[in-house]
Length: 295
Image (cartoon, rainbow, N blue to C red; front, top):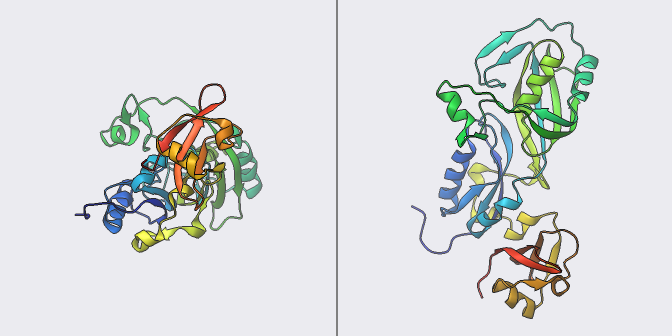
């Protein structure tokens, strides 16, 4: 059991191994870090690898600020075969002869799946419908109608084939976009079917694979400071008197913090330690969404 008492606080950027669910990674991280307070900012398919951002200790309260970030992926689309899970883990549900489809055809079809589009979530996914996750229903042999949801695909690039009918792709997209569904829709747009394999997430917002730690190498020394959970958001430095008010969760005038724009704002002390996250309030005031320090 993890030791009692204060545990580590911070953000972990993990390179998730294949075959692990995001929940598996959280469970392993709890043991490696010696604390029960670990959560993730968004699921990554079990067969996929790459960036999974964890909140540890008090930083679990900051995960809400990480959940809607854009994502960047690479993978391979296999034309001619559709599967039940839309990836290589599923059972084959259809085959087509797509040997006549060339690179230019695939790139044109990918262009049609770029921008603001509607996408139907796959049955084997963590999305909740009427209180139940779709993958739970799928395991029970139940398939339900899913509504198409708006997503944004900023980049869907296709490289030269690495094998007959197998094309490497790079996707930059909004949170909530399923690359598996993009692969299946690409196959359909080309007059057949397709599935995704070798999916790897290279970035979640400003957190990249270059800074990711292999799961087995995760320890408290590899954690980023809690303030990194607000990476890319405006940072306000509080003087000693203002820091005391922040620790008490006080509503403050915007001018007292120098808060401009729409927020939220990371409020730190002179050493860069995260004190709180503030959000807009009434009139010209701001209020704490999360306070990490005690008075």
